[in-house]
Length: 319
Ligand SMILES: NC(=O)c1ccc[n+]([C@@H]2O[C@H](COP(=O)([O-])OP(=O)(O)OC[C@H]3O[C@@H](n4cnc5c(N)ncnc54)[C@H](OP(=O)(O)O)[C@@H]3O)[C@@H](O)[C@H]2O)c1
Image (cartoon, rainbow, N blue to C red; front, side):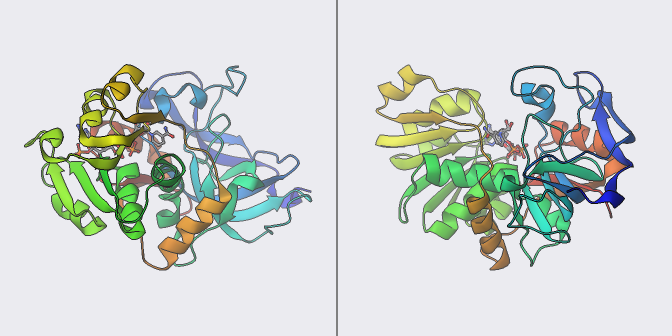
């Protein structure tokens, strides 16, 4: 049963119609109710993905029915405040983090209700701001490298957007796995990408990556477009190109004897635990571009869309 003390109002960032950051408003909303198998989280921090306001799922349910007003931000770190009786692996007071369902309200609010199956204990060594920066980027990187890319120690992986939210985690996780990591980024970001564990860095403004990298086992693309389409040239025959930012041109992939995979990240509690263990042991570290107070979420999105980000943008909710 939901904790009785939690009923009432909360502050939240909401949108009442589709659009960009200009449609985000900071206002009062009802504290969400939990259903079977769910937890209510007191949000301490939430991360945004700059492109999320362009995703259809941000405004609809899984049946494509619009669901206004909507609350953005799908990554949360906070404290369990209410819990349904079916949930056995968590209790009120637990500090948790996770990736939320893209088709329902997000974490840019003081409270969020979510399926408990998507949530796990947060890395104990990290504060909530740092923990909130990990779930979407960490899971996307993990699933690209291992679930879809089947990366093995000693293999070579080319990571596009190596300084970005997803890329900065992909570089660190691939390095931890013992892969040879090549990262692409803009000028001035070489040092950070090297610190994250890349063996070789390509400033994409200065060199064509396909002239430098060849015969790699795997490409992880977070950019899409022509960057994705030029990537097939860099993999060995039988190698894999995984993208999270575009569709695969099957004909092109076939021409170079590569396997092309495009996927949407999925919540995964087991993988989140692995990511938490890596964070707790210092094998990976959060990379945060900037933190904004919840009320300034509009500015956070404007900044995220305009910039070439280095890591994640986080909303501080209780700070
Ligand atoms: N399918 C999924 O499940 C999934 C999950 C998460 C994210 N995504 C998508 O993945 C994309 C990246 O997300 P994100 O959160 O990582 O974004 P982000 O934090 O904005 O990072 C993007 C990075 O790409 C770099 N970049 C831009 N153009 C480049 C180029 N031509 N070559 C190499 N790097 C380039 C940018 O900085 P510099 O140019 O300064 O290096 C930036 O660091 C977005 O489209 C997002 O919607 C998809």
